[in-house]
Image (cartoon, rainbow, N blue to C red):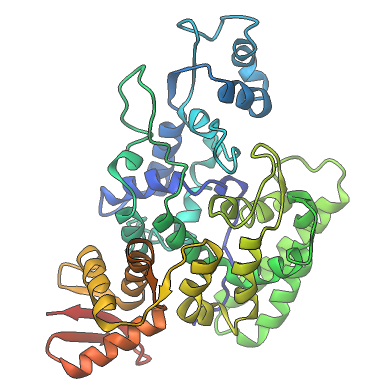
Length: 415
């Protein structure tokens, strides 16, 4: 069992989940990677300048987001006061990430990456178990995610003919992508999310990131206090102390009237709000602002998470039923062996290793995503595993299990 479901190093730069598509794709191209290489590839790709038409959406974005002095000529061009940044009439050169973020139908238009984010954003892929620490190679969860990303999305920052419209915006998330990312975020940060959203669900008004970021010190301290009796190693003790240290740093920020835009409070709260806007569970009245609202989807998702005995029990036994309701899939709960096994076989073909084994939980998760988004039916991960167990008893030579040192089912192989 995981000691703490809390992000190791939350950063403000982790706002937009869509950037993971390019990062994980690049990681999949080699057996081992360096964090610096991956991070710099991402920054180079998203900051590549492209000529685009000066649309109303882009003008609005430039005026509100690109406010630093280095963008002065670009703002003037957007205001049509000068043609200094234009190469052609009605066109300007802009970073490709700004073009994608400028789209007015995005639920949030913030999250631009800068050069210093090369190692900060990549930490998100580690915390979500998409990449393996040390080698930064792609893990099974990363393979699941990449299987749900189209070729056009993977290459959207990398390959484009000049002067052509960019029709595939990687910052949009499909329904299967939302399900896998939502599961991964709760698995990585569920202990904190349960406490934070228990507070937020009591609100009927809009709130800002700074306002709710002030809740974090108490949440960190409460989590640390309740976790002490479960400490099993020196690493666990270090994690608890890190929570307490971060709580103290945020308290110092609260006392500072001008703490700056990137401080421990903003780092800690942004990644607990902005990704859930992408996932349709939190609403921003203005996609360019830092103001948020609780909606029906927020309550229908987080209430079951808060009520569950643990993060593990929620993910194993209630996840798909909860997202079915909160994201309006209107799927039917159907624990049918044939249906479950057909989706398992499809997932198995994606995730099996060269020797034929696949992690049972990852296999059941991807199969559940296929079932809900493609067939309109859902089953929980625990129900899927029960079907596998029954099948193994019936056909022990066709279904092989591998267990870990604690006797827990870990991998499965189909002959």
